[in-house]
Image 1 (tube, rainbow, N blue to C red):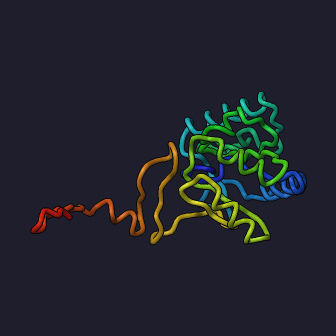
Image 2: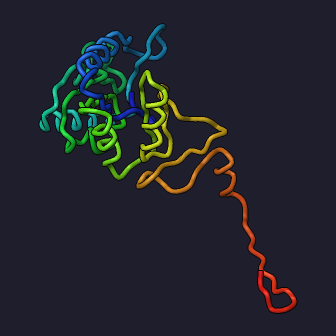
Image 3: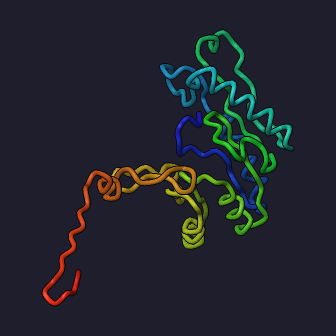
Length: 208
């Protein structure tokens, strides 16, 4: 549902695999069992409240106005079973330009916005263009290339072939406008320590 601070918000796919990726993502989205969480096999339920649902609608409308193409979803599910709860169909949008809200803001809702990039260089440029950098993800078969790409991303956490960067023993926090300082890990513990600087003058006038 996208309601996690490190959820994937926009997906930048190199041109050579873009069409195949869109087809695969659409197929997987349609296969998701949608409904109430108490039902067996349900993988996708309601969003938190009406504010999330209305923001999702607004971001979809804005994406379509910015050249986007609706691939899957884009509406509330029909049927009495969905009258209670804030349900919204999982949505995939392709091709919205870089000025669209789905490409510049956190939707925090059930939207996956896909954007084509000519190559790795353009994908990196698009990724680092925003003033935010909490979490990012890189997928690729060549781990050396993926790792090199991850090192260039301006983000506090980067997952390589994994979509969750949470580790209790590792520092968590963002770059740029996504925050200052770190939680978790040794770096997080340092915030609770008090440093002390002691300066002493030795005999002969030398200070250290």
